[in-house]
Length: 505
Image 1: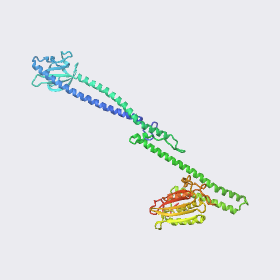
Image 2: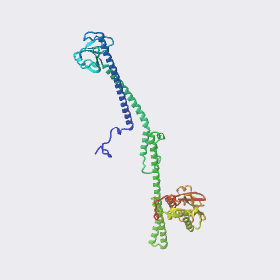
Image 3: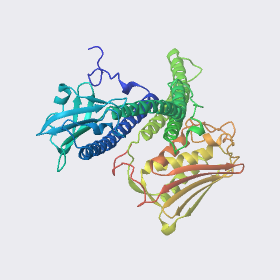
Image 4: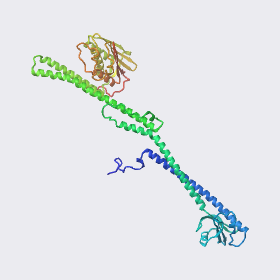
């Protein structure tokens, strides 16, 4: 069905609705003013016509009375209309006399002031007018339209009339004058309206130009920044165009921030895939190498040692995969177990485990718990993993003899875990990335001799688990003092994180 709208199935509208707003406003104003001017002109003509006819009717009545008076002052024959020769009789004045209800004489005043007798046809046009003073409009052949009246009473019955041609000429001139004035006024108003509307809509055009420029920017790939904004002069909230400009700028800000976040997410994903591939490639290469040696029966390495190395690399790869799966589940918002956990007991056990693994460090435990309780609601194994990762991080990245203090304290509605060491600290340029995945500071922070490097996921997991429990984690570091702080809501104040007791990731 050609020419039909896809949405409504009706022919597309091609009338005024498809014109520009500027055109429609000008047309609307012009039509409105034309209607107003036409109504005013028509009203003026009608009022003037009523006034002129009232004046004419009064003059016709006066003429009839003068005619009757003149006949009474100058008695004569029944056909005598000599009173028309009196001074003051307007050109075209018509008079007639009645005898027994029949017109017996009828004359009119010519332009040169003489009397002219009406013909039989002209008299016939005056028949049927009763001498009761009522005004009538009659068309007299050869003379035009007249307003006539007849009076009798106690005097001589007489008829008088005056032509309406003068009134019509006045009304015609009035119509012409009003038409000319209205046309000139409408033309001037249309020009002024067009200028004003064009000037007022100019900011809206600049807003549209900004939107068109932004729409041409490729937003589907790469970094997007520095999108054009609507100028400040066009963002006045007191005007409609300014309101559109303000909203458009907010929309552009939102789009730009969303695209920037998308770009950062893509970069993190690419870096995550690259780092994960790199981490997995090393143990896979080792496993493949030892397997090849065992297949060829190389006597330089025993099968038992090769198998131990394969097992170690497999365990390393398994741990890495499990860490990645844990982060993925936390990102998806998988529910955690919800049980009451005593942080004091959990931290004390984690410190004993860390002391056994790093006896060359000075481990200290500090508990400042009100009422002896530091209870939170959450997943005990994941919270233990948070503390263990922090302690492992402190042990791996500080030299032997470093003092590591682990504390638990309660403040109001929160439980706080602090892990502080007096090691070399974290470089300032690395500090903002310390909780990112696969981030390592091995090149800057010291590591205990013989300690194996981590995958760079420990602190990322700690941050993700703390956030999943409605808490937060942050770090402060300078040479000689590094402190990680984990803040968790106490039991009874923790927000729901969607888990049911006994269920979790």
